[in-house]
Structure formats: C-alpha cells, structure tokens
Length: 284
Ligand SMILES: NC(=O)c1ccc[n+]([C@@H]2O[C@H](COP(=O)([O-])OP(=O)(O)OC[C@H]3O[C@@H](n4cnc5c(N)ncnc54)[C@H](OP(=O)(O)O)[C@@H]3O)[C@@H](O)[C@H]2O)c1
Image (tube, rainbow, N blue to C red; front, side, top):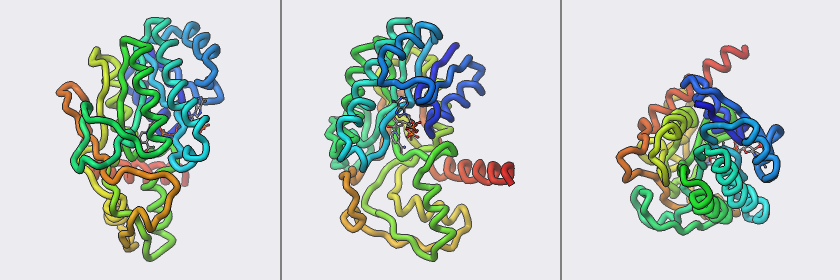
C-alpha cells in the first residue's frame, strides 16, 4: 500500500517511514518543511496529488512544558491540525492514523490505563492531545487513534539519551521517582503502527512498551545496561519543579485483543542501546 507520513522529520516520524519501507510499502515521507499540517489547503492539495491508501500523522507540538505558555500553538497543532489531516485523508478515501499520548490521563487510577478509561488531562499539552482525538474520529470513518508514551528513538532528543550523556559526565544524577509510565521504543511503535494501519481494526488503541517503571528506574536500567557507574538519586516531582503537571501513573495497557503488543521495555531499551552503538561505529 501507499503510506503518507506527516511530521516525518520527527523522532517517531523517521522510524515510521523506515518501518513502512521495510514492510515493502510505497512511502511518501513529509517533514514539516515539505508539508505544514496547519495549512489545510496545502494538506488537501498534497493528499489529492499523492492519493495515499493511509496517512500516519506524526506531526505534533511535543514540548510539554512549553505548551503551558504556548496554548494556542499547542491546540492548533495537536487539536485542529489532526482533524484537518483526517478530513483531507477521508476526501481521498485514505485511512488515517493519529498518535496521541498517555498525558490525556490524570494518573490517579494507579494501574495501567486501558482504552475505555476516562480521560482527565492535567497539562495544556495533555488537553491539546485529547482535543485531537475525537475530531479525528469524527472526520474519518477509517481512523486509528493510538496513544503511546515515553518514547525513545534515534531520531530525536529523549530521556534515555539525556541520561547517557549525564551518566558519562557525572557520578550522580537526581531523577524523578514518583511518575510511572511505559517506556516505548520508536522502532517497536513504528512497526506496530505500520501493521495496524493496514487492518480494519479502527478506533482507539493503547500501544506502548510492555511493563512500567519510574523515570528513576529507567535511568538506573539505562546505566546498568550501558555499564555506566553513575548513581541515581530518586527525587520527587515537586523537587524537580517543572512548569507542566504530569500524571503520577500513566502506564498504558490495551483491552482490545487486536491491538499490537510491544515487547517489555528493558528488552526494547537493550535494542536501542545496541542501535546507538552501531550508529556511533558507523559515524566514527
Ligand atoms: N515523545 C514522547 O515521549 C511521546 C509520548 C507520547 C506520545 N507522543 C506523540 O508521538 C508523536 C510523535 O512525537 P515525537 O516524539 O516524534 O515528537 P517530535 O520528534 O517533536 O516530532 C514531531 C514532529 O512534528 C513536526 N511538526 C511541528 N509542527 C509541524 C507542522 N506545522 N507541520 C508539520 N510538521 C510539524 C516537528 O517538526 P520540527 O522539529 O521542525 O518542529 C517534528 O518533526 C506526537 O503526536 C506526540 O504527541 C510522544
């Protein structure tokens, strides 16, 4: 099939385009410079010219703390643009897959969130991501809304990379231990999205790395696997003092048998560290 990827320059978008090519699909990968998803006229014209079978929308406003100050831009990109993309896809009879976030939840459930759980975002970013979900579904009958979480991948800045840099520079890092989530490999998620979009299992899906941990546990496992001697000192969210509130517990699980399941996050982390090492070898 022919897949069109928007936001293809981002961390997930790059992996989605690569996974689609590996799967043997025709791929039109459009980074922001090639297609601005807030320009509805351009989106419609491009979809009409390309006539894809499905669109995977990876474009987003992803600065969680920045969104607290930049509400209008966060809503334009995460709320309005996904609906316009979904509608433009429907006009050319293409399915649409939109990526959403675990931050649509308030974290009070205390066990993994499934698709039917009530949403209650704490942050502007979470509100803006939620604002993109329902309009996407309304605009295109053949829609997939996939919530994921805590992404790490070769194509962009992420928590694991930050820990690896700090772990080489310091003897100790202070990391938040009272937020628990599902770390997710962009490679694993991308492969799942490419498989899912070729099915008729429309609707809402939770797709994230298997298992859950805190940021401090993710840092400690990263250091263990990378054989870095850096010590992790657990701190609280309040001590960290970030502008945007975050859910204390936002691990994701699926209640839908047809939803793709990803391998446990420590295995995916090991594969990611190996891919980083391979890339560093290729560059050196
Ligand atoms: N990262 C996470 O931990 C996480 C967790 C849960 C869900 N998600 C969701 O996963 C998806 C992918 O996130 P990511 O981590 O890959 O983020 P990312 O690396 O920031 O990618 C987002 C991409 O969207 C592009 N973009 C911004 N404005 C655009 C516009 N007007 N038109 C077209 N493209 C535009 C960005 O381009 P520029 O770089 O040029 O701005 C960037 O390449 C998002 O929907 C995000 O909400 C992410």
